[in-house]
Image (cartoon, rainbow, N blue to C red; front, side, top):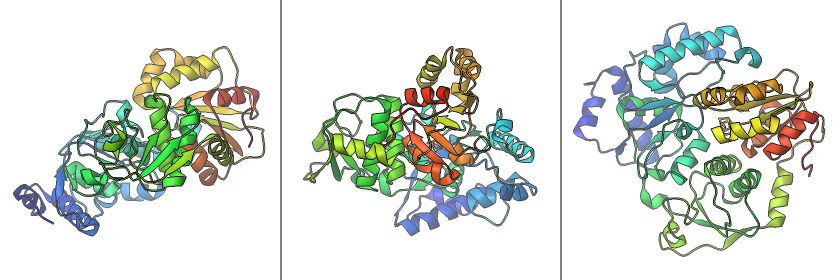
Length: 424
Ligand code: F3S
């Protein structure tokens, strides 16, 4: 690993033991990956504030102990200084305003609250969402980042044209303290080109269609980088966030190109870097129907829980849910939770959307989601969601049956107390 003089000084302890530990970790990590050098980053998004029983026993020895072990992979406890570069907290396990609904242990709630204070003092911006790009962390094209969370990574690379691999909590801890990350994978231009082609031969327009296309894509291309032809409708932020989250769930897609839409693909030729295009994988009406069916993991129509907001909802989605629920009542045997970043919840509150959703019997949740927190309303057996990602994970994680459909189908079903959408 070639290091600059500044990096050597960090490694040798000039900036203190936490930075030295970080640099040691990054060097070992980079060498294992075959990286020849590090690259500077000023944009880190990681997971620092954990709230599990095992972390609680570490926290009894102080939060430096937690950060040292979880974020620096260090048995030795080091004093953690302020982050060297802008760093934000991704999604957490507990909604600090709705923890009673989640049934979270009060001791873990207090630990998460104290963890926020500790991290805030060290310059970690407590965004607490899987969509930091919705609440102020918007890197520019070409910017090197160190992000975790697969749905955020695919958005960062593909929609924003910034550059990140899927990092871990250790590498993002070290990156925050040093402003460095190994230069490999998607940091390198030559690794960002398309190597699969998907030809869309059916309409992909509403949110659910985009989720289905993403889910299909992940299964077909796995960890490759697809380019798309035949798209007839321009997607917006909501659709691309939904699409990317789905593609990163059924496969390990971290980057895609939509010529004329995503920034590194002004043309199909540019997406492939002038190389020959592979044979196209077709997404037509039959593939769409099959993928819809694949997302239905339930047989029982009686619905206990509807989960909206994966990835966390935009303000436009919050407005839509409120509009769909206005003047209606959710069935008394069905719970509805709508998830959004805490910053967007403030806007939803001030816009009256939260009141409308709550008046209908729903709840607006932040900071977490059921897949990450592993918390749902008690006794849930059958869920419905408008998210292909959540439909993929929650039945396995929560041992529940799961339906997938549009937001309208989910809301109508919550009101009816039974699934009204497509069955198979
Ligand atoms: Fe975000 Fe949880 Fe979905 S982390 S992308 S809401 S599974």
